[in-house]
Image (cartoon, rainbow, N blue to C red; front, side, top):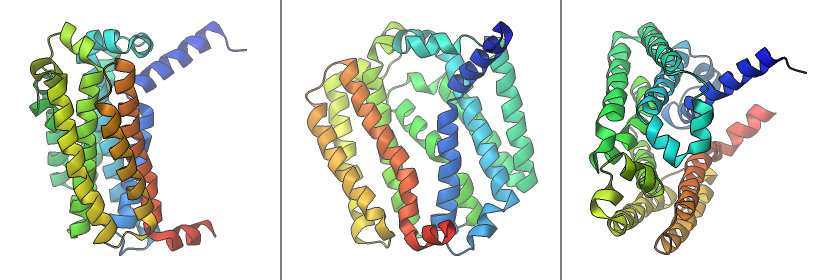
Length: 301
């Protein structure tokens, strides 16, 4: 049996894990390594990529900055989250705001130190990334359209760090990036529909509040149709191994998504859409393994 003190420490750990969304950080780490092995540095031996210390520093720096971003976002959105996500908010409050802010600065400082191991340009990159996340959390996220675009860009920024490191400018990478950016942009709009109650209470000028839910649905529909274009190109014009199965599933889910979108009005229904989009993103990470099945089999054997 755990003592009262041990239970308290364990609860605080889970609280901080919830604040920094540790599960998302893990997915980002896996995604950066898989994209490095199968896409960015496909010409290099797997061992050389896995044991590249520079890549490790970039991945750790990215994770630290993203985690700090969740902390500062949680700091500014604490009142809104109390309305939109009461259960998660109560768990998050087990760690004081001062502790969160201290952890925020430690993470950012650690990220800069790790980036300095790679190059001075990496320090500049991550310093700009840290500032952009703070600016988004403090000001930009309250603005319609600008907030959505900024959030989508910040979400895919960790992959730019690896992309710049390997200097691989193949067209297929830009098509993949376009697909990911559009899916994330759709997810941001879906989150706005899901969080209308809290945003309205705290005067966040999101698209559903300023322009109406119908306008949000029209924008989501347009973005979804745009998303089908890179998905189609990746299946028909590029060599992506068996990953085409993933894009066939995505196309089917996005069409179903649109059909259900226009019939939905409640937070519960919008939450389902948000989860569908999260599934598409997470499944996309692991579907990278399908790009080269032989490489997977070799590693297993």
